[in-house]
Structure formats: structure tokens, C-alpha cells
Length: 502
RNA sequence: GACAGCGUAGCUCAGCCGGUAGAGCAACGGUCUUUUAAGCCGUGGGUCCUGGGUUCGAAUCCCAGCGCUGUCACCA
Image 1 (spheres, rainbow, N blue to C red):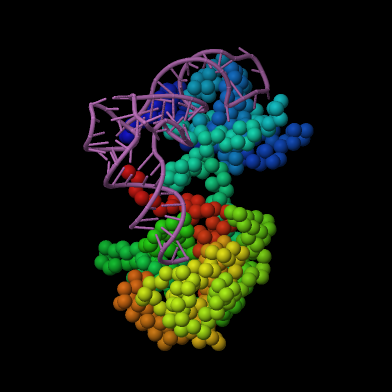
Image 2: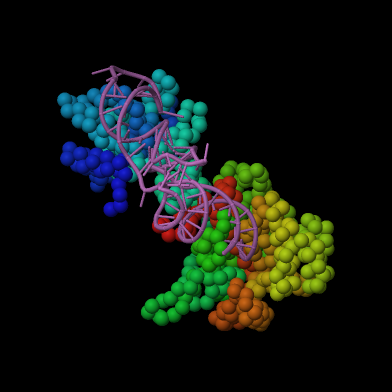
């Protein structure tokens, strides 16, 4: 046992005194909660005498004792409500121990209590529960940060230290109710997308997290080992190649909310484990998929906020269809005034230099174009925008463009200056796919740590035949940041990755 | 990975021109006999992140380490 603070010692002493009084500090019986704080506050009508038989439970977050009468606040999952406790009401007989000892001295802020009583309005006009019965439901042995809001709504002593908030998210959520709201919105975002995709008849599936070969994206993986099989396994970086195998197997549409793992840098946009949704639909192309993305995310905005506009930082982002569409070349021309569509590698390098973009010497034409786009365009695209038609070198799993040589049928959706979605007309020509994998192997030999592996089983599946298919990935964490107006990925992940404590 | 900043009581912070610690809330005690009070009075509480160094003396200055944050780099 680590060193206990004064307050922790007091709480343990209080716990023992409660036990000595014959009161269970952690009673096993259910407590028959029948409403919530917010429900009462929203629905109480003093003249209609409703909410006269309420049973609520939660943490006691404040406690103002005035002799034989006290006011306390209970916080449940919906918010806080004041309760009024009078000594002779909760102790109708001679024995006043429950009030004088237990309530006044042995209960601490943060303890879970349950009350039964009726709702009324105090002289000062606050909706309050007049308590007839009070029980302890769970004793708290550690003091919570005390955050207070005064009459003017000013928050005092806010619990703001990011390290403590992320390491002890449970505390963060208890004292910062807006944090719970963020995660409730995130959950509704998933529900909204499931509803949309299920209504179209697509199947939610699960594919392996532990993979003997990793693929579907350009990234460095986490490596692990299976003891019984005595084999190296990778944590997936994407689930693309497995979902396409399911399309080969005959499903029309499959999707998966997939936790992926990439062994790379961390930032306010990157956590080592993150969530994507990937969707594959047979007999469709990327044009069709763009319409789906617009429609689905417009629905998400409406489901979360009741409208298509979402406030994100200083911007109002409008998810209403249709979104702007630029080809990558058009976007670069739009933001730099330079048409690079006909340039060779040397000309592209010169252009990049002219735009003050530093390039590694060994990168190829496609990567240079992507660098120019990333430096000069992406951050300026605040409203949802589709960027289409990417260089083939960067997209080894996408189908070659139907009319323009050197490009593939791919789009990314950019929003608030960041990619939130990536999609293609999927490459289903097994011979072309094998050549693309071989190009990746060459890149790997040249030292590209993110180059893809050649997946023979995936090629075998394609050789049996995959229908024309459109595939989509959406970064759920990035989308959640936008939909909840959060500045950091750590604010939309319950337990973001951190270094070990101590 | 690079650069910058931060780490003092349960929480939020002050002190940092070197003389071994303060405030508010929380805790404890008192006040408090019936719809308010972050009330009022009083008391306690700190390996000042860790380890070295300089110094008569270090929370304060120097070095190293650990952790966090921000920006950049890689990337979703």
C-alpha cells in the first residue's frame, strides 16, 4: 500500500466506523432507481405535483449542513440535482445516528448514495428532492478533485491537467461532465453509421486482428508472436485485404469498424491504435462511393447535432450535400496557380523547389505530387471536399483510371484541413495487382519501411475473381474529433496511449 | 526523433532577485433547530518529480534522468 494522504486515512476511518455501526458500505442489493436528475429537472411541474415518488442514486458531490437540515447534490449519469435532507425525516425515531453520525460525518464527497423522496421547489426556486430515505450505496476512499461552479456559472478549480485527465479518465468524466458528452456523441456516431449501412443491406463483419502478413495500407506494424504456432504475427494496420476476400466470397457489401495498429509517431492526430470503418460494395465504383460518403456523413451530422452544420474550432463545417470535388491536379492548380498535370519528374522537382517544399532525394513522381498537395492544399480545405484521381505509384490497391494514364480511381475526403476518408475503385485485376505488389517489394528493398508485403493468398483470391468493387475507409477518431469539436485525438479516445506511469 | 515549456498540499495555483514553503477549495473541529452558505471562525496537511552538483544554506542556480504538454517531422 502506497503512502496514504490525510484525506484517504480519514475516509478509511469513516469506512470502519460505518461498518462498526452495522451499515454495509458496499451493499449487494440492487437499488430501485426510477428516474434521473436531468429527467426531473426537465419535467418537474410544481403545480402538477409530478415526480412525487422518485428514487435516484449517484455520487454526493456537495454537502451543506445547517444544523438539522442539509442540502446536498447528487450527480448521476445525466447530471446533478439538489436534495434536501432533514434530520427528523430520515431519522423518524429516537435514534438520530443516521443523520448526526453517518450523514454529517461519515459520508464523504464522491460516495454513492441513493435517496427516495418527492420533488419540490425551494424558496430560491431550485428543483430539489425532499429526502425521506437515504442509503449508502458505495463508499469512496479517494477524494475527487473539487470543481465548483458558482452562481454566475464560473467554474472554479477546474480539473484540467491533461496527463491526469487521460491517465485517470474515470476521474475526468466524474468532474468534467462534458467529457462524457463527447463519448456519448462518439457512440451515437457509430450507431448512426451502422443504421445507414444496415439499411442498405450491408453486413457488419469481423476479420483478424492478428495477421501473418500485414497489408492494406502503408505503415509500420506492431509485431508479436504466437507461442503454440511458434510464428510471427502482426497486429493489423488495415483490414482491406480480408474484406475484399469476403467480396470474392460472394457478399454484396461488408463493413467493419476496425481497430488498427500502426507503430509510428504520436501526435494530436495519431494514436498507436485507432479505429477505421472500412466498407466494400460489389458492382460499384468510386464515383458512387463519393455519393455514399456525402449522404452518410450528412446523416451523421444531423443525427448528432440536429442539423448539417457542425461548429469546429473557429469554423462552421457544412456537411450538406453535395460537397466540392477537385481532382488532385485541379486542387494544386487552384491553390498554387500551377498546372502540374503534364510535368515529368524533373519538372515536378523544380516546381516543388519553387514552392519551398523540401523533398527527399529518393522519392518518386507520385510522392512528389502528394507532397505538393499536402503542403499547399490540404490544410486550406476546411469544408468537406473530395480530392480525386491520385498518382498510381501511391495507390497499389486501386484500379487504374478509366481514362487518364498514370492515375488511379481514388478519392480522399478532406475536412477541417485533414483527411477523414480514403476510397477507391478497387483493383480486381490479379495480374496488375501482382505487378503492383512487386513494385512495393522493390520499394521495400530500397529501404521504404512502409512498403507493402506481397500477399499470395490475397492474389489467389483475386485470381478466382472479384467483382468490380468500391472500397472506403473513414478514420473514426478523426471524424469524432470533428463531430465533437475536439482539438486532440486523445479527447475522443477514452484511454489514449501514454508512457508507463513512474 | 528535434525544439520549447511545465512538474510545489487531494484539486487549482502563487513563491523561483538562493535563507529549507503559501492561498482558495477539499479535510478535520466548531458554528449551524428546519428550504441554502463555493457561508463564518479555527486547526492540521508537503521526500517542493527523481538523482547528482555549486553553496555555510537549494523549491529557487547548474547537470542528468523520468513524466506530461505544445510545435515540427512520419503518418490515419
